[in-house]
Each structure stands twice: as C-alpha cells, then as structure tokens.
Length: 112
Image 1 (cartoon, rainbow, N blue to C red):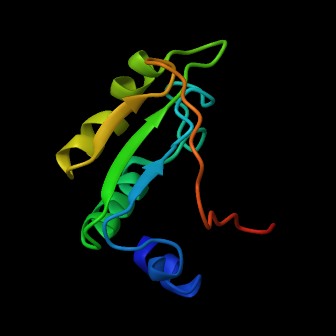
Image 2 (tube, rainbow, N blue to C red):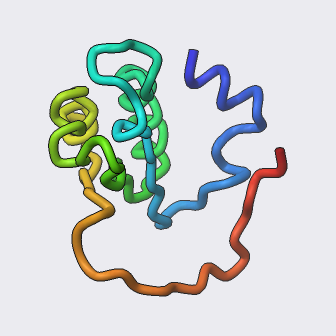
Image 3 (cartoon, helix red, strand yellow):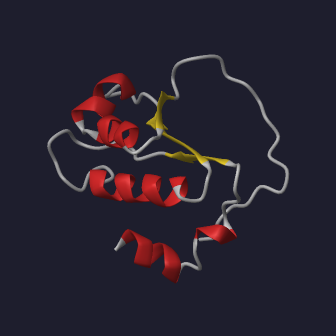
C-alpha cells in the first residue's frame, strides 16, 4: 500500500535522486506509548526504507527529544529503530551532536 500511495503521488523519483541522503522522521516522541496510530507505524517505516534503499540513497530514521519523551527511549520502545536498522537505515537522535547550519541548493518543499 505504501508503494501504491507513493506512485499515486508521482513516485519518489520526483523528489529523490540517486546518491542523496533521505531522513525519515516518524514522530515517535510526539506519540503516546502503546497507542497505535499516535506515531508512524513500523510497517510504513520499513516500506519507506526499502523503497528508498532500492534507489541507491542513504536513509536515516530518527527523531528529536520532546518535552515528554526522549528519542533514545522511544525509538526502541516503538520498535521503529529496530525496523529501520533491519532494513539498512541509520538510526539518529536529532537531539545529540552539534548543531550545524547547511545550505540545501535547489531544496524542495511540498505545498499543502
């Protein structure tokens, strides 16, 4: 279903090119532990990682700490970190490490 939804949007090739790096943010720190639907489903994360990996792009999955939950706790608790690594993605806590500013030439934002 994820592949079909992406194709209905015109496919990932419109947004992602070979050799790029893509970050998936599943909002695990904004959901409610144990409440399905309050954060991204692991099957959706797995499908997106597999789709992107087949395009020869680097894939990272992660989140930043919130005022209620930390990514280091929620990524394992929701199994999102495990699923991401199983399918070859790097798992990242955005609240760790130095903050750096980068320019994104020809960046693209979806219009809502």
